[in-house]
Length: 293
Image 1 (tube, one colour):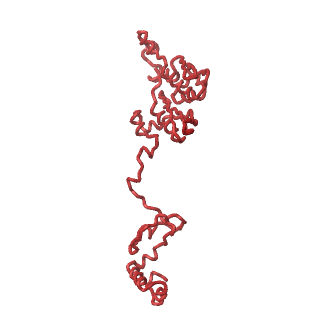
Image 2: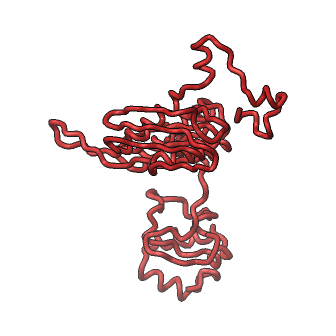
Image 3: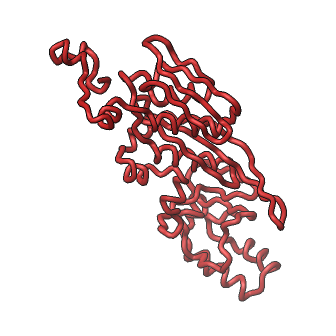
């Protein structure tokens, strides 16, 4: 039967074998309400559509989404036959802190004072990552530990630790804390440290030594990465006793903080510090940036 044309008397007699007179009268009355042109454009609905309506809808009205889908008709078992429309429902949106995870640029901008573009230019390195287990009376509780460092390569350096049941969450927390804890580290001429520094952290004992220009960074891999993030190009280091990576990173950070600066020594001795280069070269910095002096 072609629904585009009215039923013939022969077709109506055939329908009487399947429907009661009341049902047949209702069918004919319903089809007279719907335009005949819509039957040619209408596509069959998927019987396995998970989004089908659970109530009896008004079939006398044409649904522009379900009856006339956009695109080519490709029936797929278990999937709707047309793309679902976008729903602007505020209750379906996640909060910003849940959507962006632990690395929230707005919070870091407020805490550190750097813009989001500046924070993205920071170098972040993973120094330690391993699994830790806490034995309790209920059994073993497994978590992951991460230690990251962050620096801009020009005098700023920070370390951060993170623990979580998921490895990715622990890494995000460590990165967030490293960027949050960045602090300025004094450098001599922008390339090395001020004199020798001896530090003891746990079982780790290390010594950081200043070096002349062109010497390079001659140290182990954790110290080399910290110097690269900080912007130190000339340095030598020696580690005695334990070489635990976590304590080595913390010891280097402690040593860089506790450098003996010339200004501090001069203030303690009650004398005035004068830069001989500025005195003998008539205030000229010999072409070096002012931050180097």
